[in-house]
Length: 371
Length: 72
Image 1: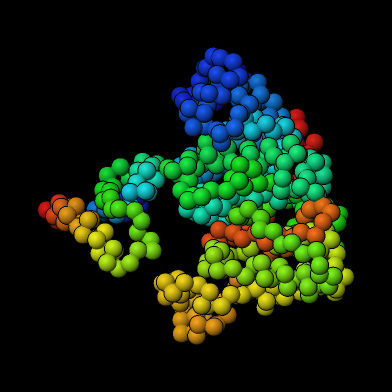
Image 2: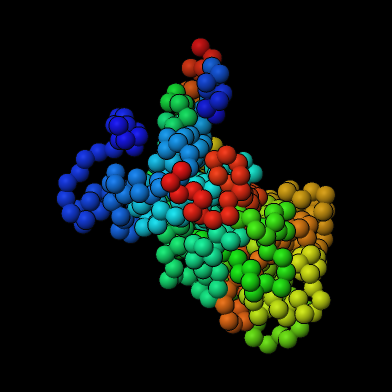
């Protein structure tokens, strides 16, 4: 018996439905199994095709996804990947991203159920990004690429259908965000003057990784005038300096996206990534009296008793607690826009390398095929 | 809460109305069906002290009833 057939024969694992594409979509939507957009019906054939790039047992328990605490398995992830419109070769990245989100420090439970409007941002580094044509250049955060769009969407459907992040019941976001539909990019390593993000995290450049960050949507930094490193960094620091982020209150790790043109100017000004972090740490702050009186007395003085407990109203409140809490990446195409991406705050980003089922690093997605 | 309940403790959860669906879903998923839910008006966060006292007064009758039951 086909292993997939045996998995879906267990109670409530599958169901038979008749009807055309529209009817099936209506059914899925009525059951709350979609993000509101049409899905590709995950029939047995499509799910099996999706698993062509899965090198572990299809019923292998990967872990429990909060807040429903349902078990993620390769075939369940594959069903959602089919629904999202993924190509089979995207599957190893999706599985790796789910594993990364399950790392305790990421705090998936908090990110799923919070009233905050965060969503897991996936950033792919290494050779796999190019092999899968994951956009890192112009419009990297926008539409147009099947890989970016469908991998990000698969993650959302997984978090909804397996994790139980149902709006109003499991996902309590007050506002939500467009980033909750799909949020997947690659870093523009070839146009970065610095070592890539995953190399900074201790991996060699030839290794492919997925980083997950519990992030808001990007806040733009428009700087068409600065022609010095200090000028650009001052504009970024100023954009970061806002009292309304979770990072400032919960010791988070905000992400700074530098466009290639801005990154080139900053690097030519003699700034390494570490120097950028130190500049931003020193210059991204908010006066204590920028917060409301209630926030000062009921939150900031209590959360930071040593530094703010007795501080005067003109005290400087840093956006992050140490320079290393700024994450730096180079993304995007032509143009002088960079971005500040705040996070959920009570979360740490997680970077995992792409390995096969025996623990060996994988250098091509084809290594997974036909396992 | 669910952990305490599963250890045989008597547990009640005070929850604002907007979050009752999440609380019920989590109780179900975590096997804490015996968790007593006391609903108060939403919101709780950011309210002034006088409104906080109103929320407490709202919860008090059910809380007293439960505590009496717990202790009997």
